Amino acid sequence: MRAFTYERATSATEAIRAVTRPGARFISGGTNLIDLMKLDIERPEHLVDISRLPLQGIEELRDGGLRVGAQASNSRLAAHPLVRARYPVLTQAIVAGASGQLRNKASVGGNLLQRTRCPYFYYDGPAGCNKRAPGSGCSAIDGFNRNHAILGASDACIATHPSDMAVALAVLDADVELLGPNEAERTVSIADLYAAPGDTPQIETILQPGEMITAVRLPPAPPGRQKYRKVRDRASFEFALVSVAAIVDVQRETIASVRVAFGGVAHKPWRAYEAEELMIGRRATVATFELAAEAVMGEAIGRGHNDFKIELAKRILCRTLAHLTELT
Amino acid sequence: MHISIEFVVNGQSTPLALDPRTTLLDALREHLHLTGTKKGCDHGQCGACTILINGQRMNSCLTFAVMHDGDDIVTIEGVGTPEHLHAMQSAFLEHDGFQCGYCTPGQICSAVGMLDEVRAGWPSHVTADVSTAAIELTDAELRERMSGNVCRCAAYPNIIAAIRAATEGVGAHA
Image (cartoon, each protein chain N blue to C red):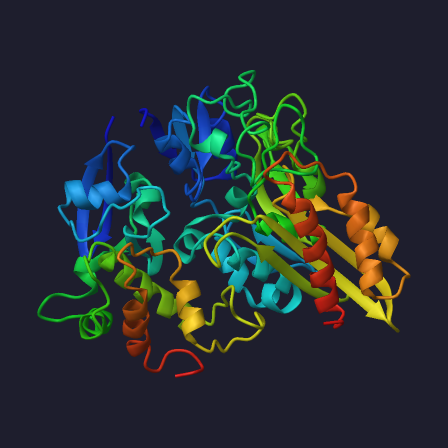
């Protein structure tokens, strides 16, 4: 591993000031960053440790929502009584990811900012990867692309975002609170956090240099039942091939409100707004769910090995919604 | 440039001056010669390096030692001693919960941390209703909660039997 210098910040403002020097990076749980440093993919010259900043609280908001400090661990968020009671889809998504040891270490902010698990980015040094070495090409498009994106991808990159937690946050309409240089605060919707790969897949989020995620804010839970369903190659400790987070409210056999988002299919959690619109006001039947599945996957593009994901995503959506509306 | 830190390892205050690149795993093994903690994959995938940091199980390979100034660290050497085995260690002996033994320190530290998580009522991926505070500690729950510890001898049936034996009084089921 390359040498770096290290400091621990005692306040967010101080951390942001420290991270403005060239080659500096924040480190929190480190479960993704250190892994990538060992592989010489991440090469920070200076690490600013933000893991002990007082951003660990999980507190109920006056409007009935929840504010989660970015330095809370994945485990603590998943186990929080209010999350389990009001946002079970979030608990289900978090405990569907990684292992107990990793969830204890990894922070909420770091989970959102973790890098892709595309093997050409992660392991295969000599192969081209526009995310790792911009301009070197995408080896996945004509290579082994079983785990890759079917929505939102570009000719420069077909990598997926690996987070389960982010998929639940997308369906819960979470906001992400950011703090930048000169105390500049702003809030972005989770829907706007991730940048489309386009020609610049190395730019993964809308975060500006020096900006830090300080919290994730959940609005009050919408009415209806919630579910996170994940399909993967192993029963546990494996990234999603396809996952679905869904919240649906049925009144008198009619869908009053519904939200769905997919994981494992794009560079970000893929919220299916059009499919949601299509379902509202219709009867909660398999035919309705199939209509929605066709709508969202109509624009999907397979790259060969990952063609199966299109059909898989449709079936998982239908199964999940059928389960939530007690059709099965 | 070395950085001076001090943490508590197995109850003993331990000062160290380390290159910031030193993982907690390497600090324990190479600097403190506590070689019970094993290096398997060194990438957080196998769990052989699992230790308890401030009471929680974590992969010591994926964290830098300098990030743990002031922390309370327990390794397999601190879980029990040959004269005074921890109940989990006795259970692994009793149920032959290993073959080659390389993953065993990580399995035992992980199991000890895991049972504390169950006592705290934390749900898992196989918990049917995550809103419940009472976890029924089935074998499916044990397998899911231990999935971060790989055993390439595949001694899993006996590992589960050992942990099951050590779970007396833990969870809603027992």
